[in-house]
Image (cartoon, rainbow, N blue to C red; front, side, top):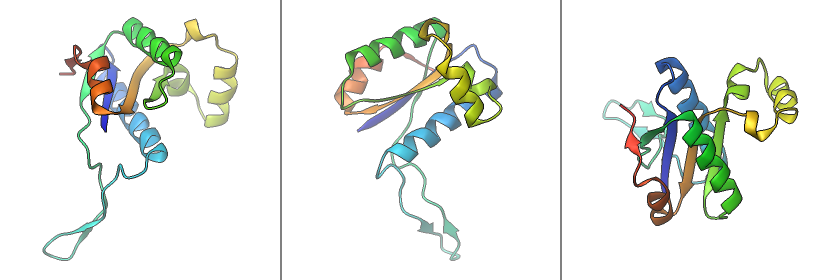
Length: 135
């Protein structure tokens, strides 16, 4: 399995960090075996489990991210988990506020800050193979 995040590279560093954190938490909550076991160092200190797969951070423009998100949802491949993080969520004061605002927002009005894709390596590579790394 493979995971990638696709982020709007024009965003400020803090929003990029917040977007990737939110997407990572969402993926971890939905995906078994993504987090490794706790590990004990030589001094006996316990280190919480971290992701056991690499997560490349790729970049597209906000328009391209919306197009990619819409295409992935339309394709509806059950093997690919698609998680979007959008401006409505980023600007909401609570989850209840997010639900209310998103429910009244049409899809063409939603600006995505980033996406997280998780699925079979071949399929993810086919979707993202031409994308540039975020730098």
